[in-house]
Amino acid sequence: MIVGMLAMDELVNKTQKIKVEQIEDYLLVTISDVVITSNRALEILGTIAKYCKKYDCNKVLLDERTVQRRDISGTEVLDISVGMSKIGLYKIFIAFWCKRELIDEQSGLLRIFTQADEFMIQHFSHEHHAVDWLKSRT
Image (cartoon, rainbow, N blue to C red):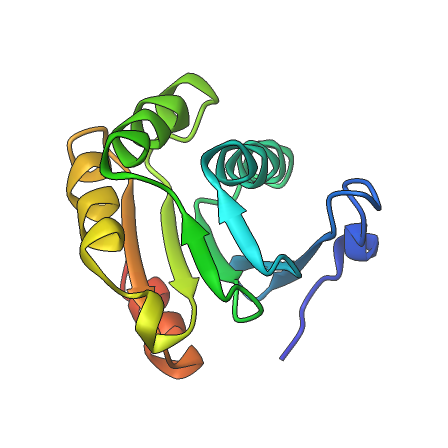
């Protein structure tokens, strides 16, 4: 059930291909990228930080089911984690809804690195698992 549509800030800007909606007590952020690089990941996370602050929301479902692959090395995963702190993602829960094959060592590293900085990331291949996880966060 959609409670508020944030005027469906369907852009952030059209070149970024990001759509943001408020669903119950979390933000649904949808991207249409096929390949994610570390720079693009930081852009997306920067957008998430902006909308979390704007709508005073600390739960995000990131729909990245269009992503076919991530071109991100293990070192870049650490850089992304550090970058998340710099862009203001604190005490935020982000459920990545992605293809099963993208739940790998790098996604596990990101989860581990970000836990130390007071925000949590988890990857899911099914929407209902992701939403259930978000709803269980306080």
